[in-house]
Length: 370
Image 1: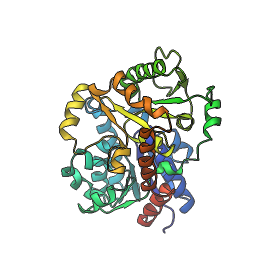
Image 2 (image 1 turned 30 degrees about the vertical axis):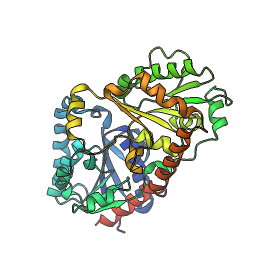
Image 3 (image 1 turned 180 degrees about the vertical axis):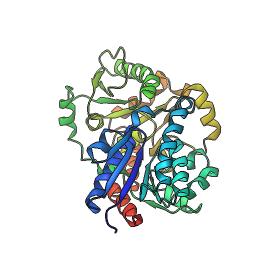
Image 4 (image 1 turned 120 degrees about the horizontal axis):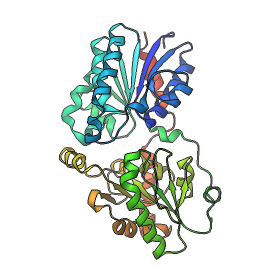
């Protein structure tokens, strides 16, 4: 381990900001006096980083939507590239956000600044042919168990550090969580998780809302609650409870869930919540994604398990009828479908590794400091 230096951390969206903040905190405890500058948000700022650029100006979802942000990203990259060339930093840590960070990694390597990339681009899903772009990275810290072998087999130094979700505090007991939401612990609870990004919520909330209504019509004892974000709107919720706070409470309260694909499904797995998975993209983005997709599933629980633990409903298949039919049996914890899912979710929890991901990334980073 080295003495103090200056590190640049780049995180372009809220989840990356949270993961980067944990790494920054771990680094500051390992390397006293370290200076950290960043592209990021409130979490990195609270962790002691000097945030030079705010991530909120750059974050979008989808191929089509990203086009509008290209000029802003190029201007940002030009400024950061100048700082790399001036050897302002001893190390660069990039967190997720591959569209921008792959270019930034190349710029850092060209300037002779070592790069640690935390949370690998999902090239196993979108194109192994792009892996050579990671040759600029000194070390890749991956959070899914199958990624280490995938990248190492293609010549990229990679280490599975465990999934950062494993570091979250344990959820409250279900009855306590249900009561804290103003609901009845004696009744089944349908948790609704349409995502944290405005675009995701706009596309998924209407179908999730109607699916929940169908469920509650078929089983009047079911109560429903949605994990909301202040950045999005949830029109006409009816009897569905809105919870604008820690989504972990909703996971803890849920008997079963309607989940967007991605990390949300791992959060459900950690809370042992059987689920139906859905996702909808901009139609043109979907056409592009469908041509590029190399994996059999989009839900991370299914990818980690290696088989379909939870059913997936994408684009036009994500209908209220299909989703309600899939989730309704899961609201009975003793049903065969719920029991089968919980077996798969237990496997996923085991494969996500031990807590301490941010600390392991900090160790990798500290070893590269001069």
